[in-house]
Length: 374
Image (cartoon, rainbow, N blue to C red; front, side, top):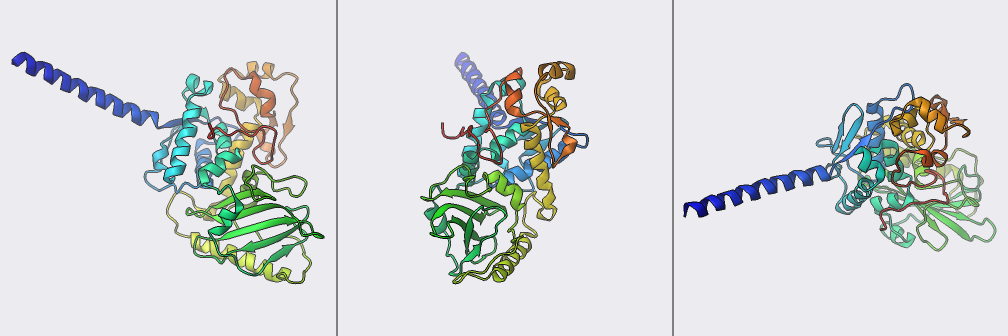
């Protein structure tokens, strides 16, 4: 009898230890570690963490103040996707992306993913952005969630569209509003493309690009517009409702240009007011912080030799030798990034391969990845 009790006790202890190990393993497995690699003289991991927070907000995360799901160290940032404030569907998609990352050669070797690569995967892949934000695949489904106002704005001299553009919108309802722009032929009225703008619960806009049949697509048609991909919309809009910056003609049956301009300015002012006091880590009064997001993906897609040395964990001299003969350039908007290379030229030289990224963050390219479709 004593022998039986002893065996049973050992089994119970073993099960308890096994359960504890399993729970600990599960807890470890759901986190992801990002590696920060200094990209310019004034770069800090704290600035990069702000860029990461804005990136998460761009794809719909609420980012509760506590816990935030983001733990910043000296060279790494640990992410717990359960604490980022995603809805259930987006949370599952985020975990799937993290699984794909962990299966990459980069993560298996380093136990980290480059922070810039991670940002590029989040917002530089349109299909990832659409999936995480829950963007409807059909424009009719996107429009059906709102009641559009009867008046129609008309733009003949856009900074974005290369042709004429009509604009419709819903009445603002706290943090809920929708805009749809149509790129149109000024003579025939034919629609070539649609772009949508709407507010998510966290106060950030959600962008969609649809073809003439109303199907969601990864980037705008360069023949009709310079809108590019959703990441370019984020950069241009700066989380705001943009007004018109060029003089417009008035057209019969449409809002006169001054009325449309007045409405757009009023909508944006109301948006900024409604965002005040929103819970979460994003301070919309500091909208220039979104630049930290852009610096992260630019410095990754167009790295300097110094940044590559950190990313590859190789001596700078050795990296410079590997890069011999490759062309360099200076990024006009951020010249302090130094002499830069293009990612597609240097990726094959890396001592390990990370999860593949799209060929361009802001513009459509031949390579558009979708790691969430598999």
